[in-house]
Amino acid sequence: MATLWISNLLDTAQTLGIDRALLLPKIEITEAKLRDRNSHIPLQLWHQLAQEIQRISGEQNIGIHYIQQNAAMAVGLLGMAAMTAPTLQHSWDTVVRYRHIVLNVGNTRFVETNDSVVMRWYPYSRAITDSKYLVDAIVSGWVINSRRLTGKKVIPLNVSLTHPTAEDTALFRSIYGDNVALNQHYNSIEFRKEDWNLPVRYADKTVHHLLTTQAEKEASIFKSNLTVAETVEYHIKQQLPLGGATVQSIANKINVSPRTLQRQLTKEGTHFKDLLDNARHELALDYLQEGTLSTLDIALKLGYNQSSSFCTAFKGWTGISPSMYFDTK
Image (cartoon, rainbow, N blue to C red; front, side):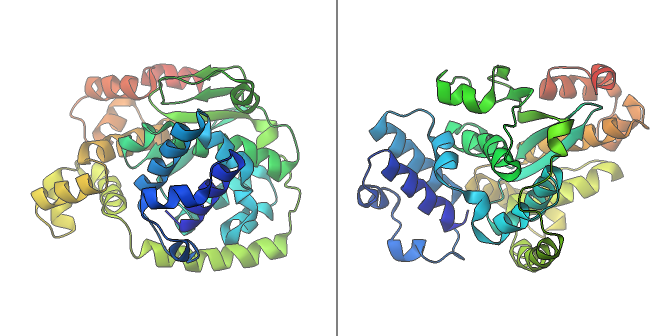
């Protein structure tokens, strides 16, 4: 996570009446380190800071306040690239493609139907989805920044959140709308297709091209130093269609022992099973969206021996069977 996220969270604390000087010692970060925009810090520190702000202020919707108080889409290379894209769809494509520049806590995928588009988030660590603060910062950001980008009152059709409870306030409803499902298997927002195709207020083809060209260069630098979780996820996706992925096979790919690999993943707050489940879930939706493979074919591509095992797993991820997905997509 870039230090910009911590700086912005400290600014949010000040709007809630909390002196940032009281908070920095809690996470052992200096102002000098915060000024280094190229410095990265553990994601857990952001969560700890948000937790402390919530404790002091009593405010439950820290993540939403964070996005509201900070025009993140207008700051830095990635934000400016998104703001000069031609449409809202292109803006979010840009953010997802070059997310390594600012913050990479997992993949975000777009699932299109005839009338809507679902943005669905696949975090690298299940521990991330246990943080209501971070979930709200990511998911409410999709809505708030969509409104900033287009200048329109974009209202989600449906929202799914992994956190089990939420304070039903006017602020919460103004962002997420009325159709909110809590304690879900994943975090997602369904947008109207017409909103997805809205033009961006500051669209500029030439500037956007220049910015994304630079973003490509910077993202490649960050990708050359991927976390262990990101590296494992990449190899899982490569190996699944070839007969499956195991701790042993992935450990062999990155030249470490299975025990060392498990230890490194634990240090990053995740586990091999989490990454395997996320990769299977993500790829399953891709295959189903294509509509050319049978349930058994998909099961085999995901490393299952039979379709029933895949169907059970899919229902655990989404709450519906693959056949129901075919009917509703």
